[in-house]
Amino acid sequence: MKKLWIGILILAVLLVMGLGATMIMQHAHGDLVNRLEQAAKLSLPDWEQAKALAASARSSWEQRRHWIAALVDHEPLEEIASLFDQLSLCQTLGDTSQFSAVCLRIASICTMLEESHSPSWWNLL
Image (cartoon, rainbow, N blue to C red; front, side, top):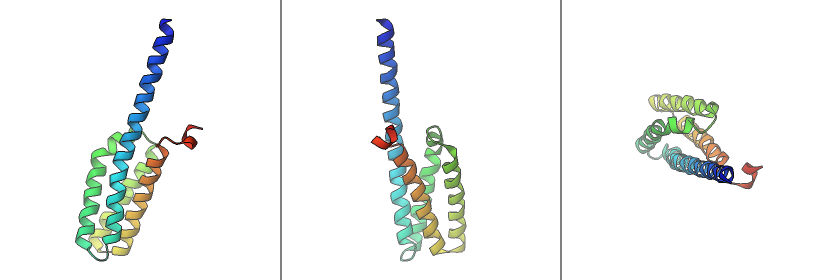
């Protein structure tokens, strides 16, 4: 009987950890995606605001990167890091069209990461 309760307890702990990881991923990426999409839209009409949003998104990413790395594959994280470096170069050069494209690329990768950790029937199969 003890083994049954220990097994149930272990499964409950794993469930709570899985739900916690899902909430961390949704919170971390949802805000980041919104900032980057706004930065992409504002790059032509308000370049300074777009740069500020991108800097805010990068700062947020740097703060949460280690927690996210504990939960996901590192390949997309390395791509995001390299894209943030490209974003800095675009800011330095003042290339607004490339800046928008890189912002949207980072946002799409973050959306993909968020969706891959959301509770859905296709993730359970």
